Length: 512
Image (cartoon, rainbow, N blue to C red; front, top):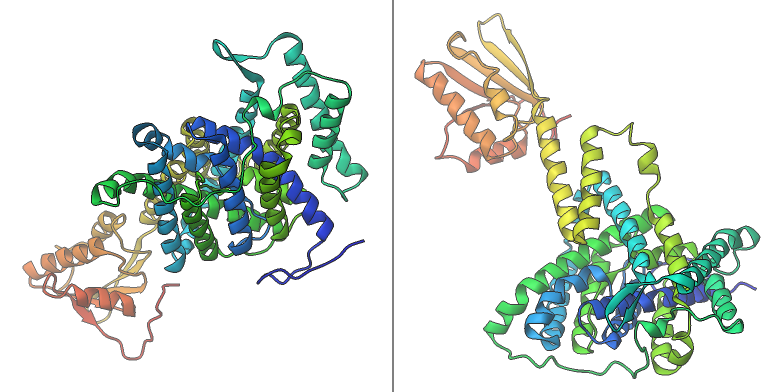
């Protein structure tokens, strides 16, 4: 029987059973990932689990995107590895708290809207790169810690794990064809767990990664000197962590928006991420951000509300407090199989189907972003490079579109009607349109279908005016939009141009 509830500010019907089961599934997939990232950074395993609990709970309650899951993500933890090695865990906690303050400010000052600058090819590259990372991370689970370091599984141990992974994948793939009442991922984890337990199968388990038993996250003020020297140490790490976390979180929010057909709130999510990281810094968590893999697990399990995220976070806390002996016996093969299916579902296969229909520069940008994401595991850098290249390509293409229609009227006045924006990229082509030597004594440049966009454009107009003045010719600018006239007015004293007003023509704020 279905029960429904309106939660918080998103007025929607919530299916209790679906949300609870989805939350349990997400918790199972978050535990090994949080443990792995904590160990990778040289932190205590509980530091990763506390981050999963705190990030998950706070962002589920306060976040701007129901159905999205946050936790101790590798993207943010990787940033802190160098700080951990050089200054220790207390500086890490201080850096996490400061990163949260930065993120909080982004949300308060409503700067989350700048995620709109990320074009679709960059989104494709980001998501596809993450899918590859998720898949490759599962391959690493086929290694075990021996006395001589990490070694690959071999012999019966390898075949056993491969068999259990295959069973998990088959269940995740086929079970939804029977019923969608219960998340297939959760069913697969339970079946493989019972299979290994009932048949006494020896295989790698969660306990082989680390122990997950502990208490409630303790309140702890970072033991660092409250001085300017400390700020100089943690500031760059905090700034990068805040940027990486917000980029991944807001991009994940956009992806979830596309899947659910609804609209999340980026600034509210930034506030939630910042609040969660501040709390992490004072409750011994390693901090984090949105986790796209777990968000996909959550959505594929049917969740569309906040309740599943709350259930996942509380489940992790209960496991830390009471359920560690049971969860530590869950075969890693079950979690690996679930995450492999998540990686397959995360990959934007449509980007391969339409690759021949996309502009070549968009294809190149998407591939580059994916490669940087996979190679460097630096999501912020990958997205930043993608946005910069896309912007440069756009500027280049826009620069080629500037045109001029030329004619001389019955009064002997030469007219240049400009089409396309005048900015730094199009200045050279714009200057080539004019025949200063052979033009008559009076020239009018008509900007009805154009606009003056930046200082380079103003400088070009100044030089053009100067050339005509040197030949005792008069140059007028007509049909400038209001913002263009304001731009030129602010440059008074630097340049001198003649603006020809037409009282019968109402200039639009934007060109057609």
